[in-house]
Length: 269
View 1 (cartoon, rainbow, N blue to C red):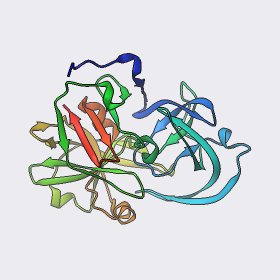
View 2: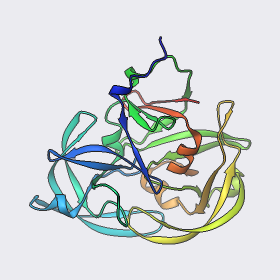
View 3: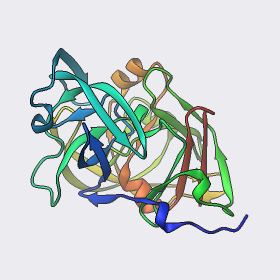
View 4: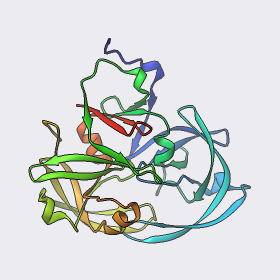
C-alpha cells in the first residue's frame, strides 16, 4: 500500500476548550457537531428543536449529577454521509460563546455508525480506505452493545486499564474506586473547574498520569482527576478504570481506527 492520505476526502475537526467539533447537518441545516463518544444519546440545541414533536423527558446521569431533559423526535442527522432519523434530548451544546455555530452533540452510536479514524496528528476524521501504509496495532477493546460506547484496554506496569474512549471528556478521569488496585503513577498538579454532560460543575484536583502503554509504545503523560465512576460502571455493566479524554488523545498524536461492526480498534502510533 502507498501510505498516502487523500486530503481532499478528509473531514477536519476543530478544537475549542478541549472539545472536538466537526461539520454535520441537522434536518438539512448545516452546523457544527460536538463529538462525544462518551454519550449514548444525541443532543440538539433549543433553536434546532423549535417546531419538532416532543417525545417526553429523559434522565441523564454522570459521575457528578443527574438531570432531566426534554426530548424531541423526527430529527434527521447527517454525519460523514450517514443519514438517519432519531430522538434527541434538548440542551445548549456548549457553555460560553463559541466562535462558530454548534447545534448538535453527536453520540457514540452516530459517530461509530461507520468504521472511521480519528487522526490526532492532522486533526481530521477519515474513513479507513483513505489511509494506507500505516503500522496499525490491534488494541483489545469492546463496544457496549446497547450504548455504542467503546472500552479500550491500555497497559500499565500493574496490569490492564479498562478505559472509556470519550471525546466528550475534555479531561481524563481515573475511577477512585479502583485507584489503589490499578496503581497508576499520579503526580498532583493543579485545581480546575470541570463541567459534565448534565452541566454540573465541580472543582477537581488534577494530577499528571504517566506510564500507560499501547503495546510497547508509552503514551505521553496527561492531566487527569480522580472521581467515583461506579455509577457509570453499573449503568454500562462493565468495568471502567478510567475515562480516556480528549486531552490525552490530543497529547498522543495517534491515529485511532474504530470498527464497531467488527468490534475492532486499531492504533497507529
